[in-house]
Image (cartoon, rainbow, N blue to C red; front, side, top):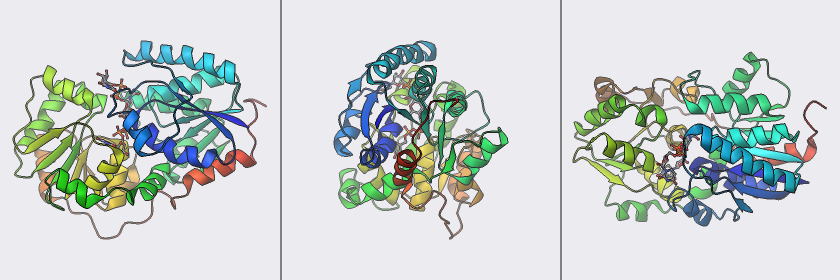
Length: 357
Ligand code: UD1
Ligand code: UDP
C-alpha cells in the first residue's frame, strides 16, 4: 500500500519522525514537504538530527499570505497526488500544510488520515482553528491524541473513523530524550539546572498584535529571572518591526534543534509559551507552564494544575511566574508512547476506502 505523508512546518517534522518510522513497516511512504518552513534551523536540521527520511518531494512553497500560500500548496500537492495515486494521505496538526494536504486529497477522492485530530480552541481568530476544523471534516481516519479531542469531535457529530491513539509527540519525546545530552546543552548555553525560564513565542495571535507582544515583553523584562528565548523567525521580525527590545534578563537566540529543546525543557525552572507542542512537553517533563494565551487546546494540562493561562496581561504574567506551583501528581494524559505504532496498525488493518464508500 502506498501512503503520501504531507509535512511543512517544524512541529510536523517532529510528529512525522515517529509516525514515518512506524508507517514504513506496513506501507510504502512517499514524503511530501510543502516548503512552508525552509530555514535550516526550522526544517533541514530536524531531518538530519531526527533521521527523518529525505522528502521525496519538496514543493518549495515558502512564506506568503494565507490564501496564496495555501493555494500554491494545493496546486502542487494535487500534481504529486495525481502522479503517485496513493491509497491514503496522512496530514498532521493544524498548519496551512495540513489544510492544503487534506483538501487536495479529498478533492481527488483519496482517503485522508489526520494525526492530532479533534483539537479545538474554539477561537476562530486563530488560523490553526480553521485549519483543524476543515481537516477534521475532510478526514476518514481521525487519530486523536486525547479523550478530550474524541469528545470535541463527538459534539460536532463526528464519530466515524475516530480513534484514540495517544499523542505522537509523547512517542517522540520518549524516543529522542536519550539522545538529548542535557548536561552538555546546558553547558553550551552557560545555564544551570532550574536556574532559568525557557520562553517560546510564535503564534500569529501574539506576534501579529503589537499591543499583546509589547505587553508580554514588558512583563517578562521586568522579572528578576534569567530567561532563554529561542526565537521563531516570525517573532524576531515582529519584535524588530514594532521596536520592542527584550530586557537584559532575556537572552534571545536562534531557534534550537529538537534535541536541544528537549534538554532545555527538561531542566527549566518554568516554561513560558504560546506553542501547542511546548505546553505538552512542559507537562511531560513536569515543568510548570505559563501559557501566554487566553485559551488552550490542551485543556487537560490546565485541569491537572500544571499549566496556567496567563494571557498577555503584564500583571497576570508576573503573578503566574511568581506564584504558580503545580501539584505533585501528573497522570498520564498523552497515551503510552505507542501512538505512532497504533496509527500504523490501524492503517494496516482497516485498509482505507475511498470517502463516501
Ligand atoms: C506555522 C503554523 C503554526 C505553527 C507554526 C510552527 C500556519 C497558519 N501556522 O506558523 O500553526 O504553530 O508554523 O512553528 O500554518 N519564516 C522564516 N523562515 C522559515 C519559516 C518562516 O523566516 O523557515 C518567517 C517568515 O517571515 C514567515 C513567518 O515566519 O512569513 C511565518 O511563517 P508561516 O509558515 O507562515 O507561519 P508560522 O508562524 O511559522
Ligand atoms: N521546538 C524546537 N526548537 C525551538 C522551539 C520549539 O525544536 O526552538 C520544538 C518543540 O520542542 C516542540 C515543537 O517544536 O516539539 C513545537 O513546535 P512550535 O512551537 O513551532 O509549533 P506548535 O506546536 O505551536 O504548532
